[in-house]
Amino acid sequence: MSTTKTRTNKRPPVTLEHEFVEFIPDALAERTLYVSIPFATSAHLCVCGCGTKVVTPISPTGWHMLFDGDTISLRPSIGNWGFRCRSHYWVVRNQAVWAGPMSQEDIEKGRHRDRRLTEAYFDEIHGEPKKPAQAAARKKKRRVRDWFRFS
Image (cartoon, rainbow, N blue to C red; front, side):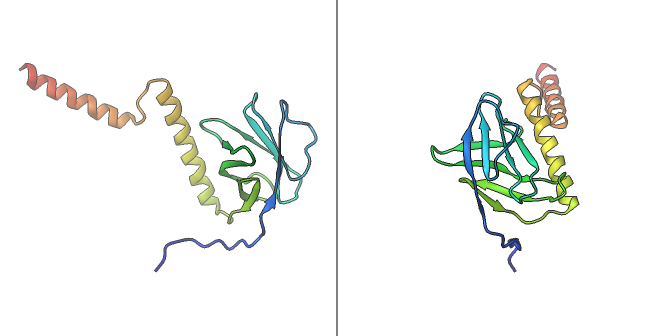
């Protein structure tokens, strides 16, 4: 039995244009992904057509952007869980590719995972151990080892 999930969403991808800008404009055009490198941000109107502005901060703990010289991809997926439409899609090579819906439980798990990864990232850049329990265990092992070594 296969454990691979199949997508039930058969909506065709939406083609996007991209535009590099210094500032994200107040009025966004449909099907245009605006990218501000100075402010490490991208924005677009939700591709479902609801007209809601979607802002994706580009950072080590947010979205990652790939520009291949011709097209743009963003990861992770864009899940507009706070919007009425609750749309969910990936931006891959200037295409909004529809992803399947997620349950509220899956959304909460994803948010929890994102918080953990963000905390671990900032702990690491500030020189703190990623997992305090593991660091405490290593410290205890060192003390025991040192005690035997100097006894």
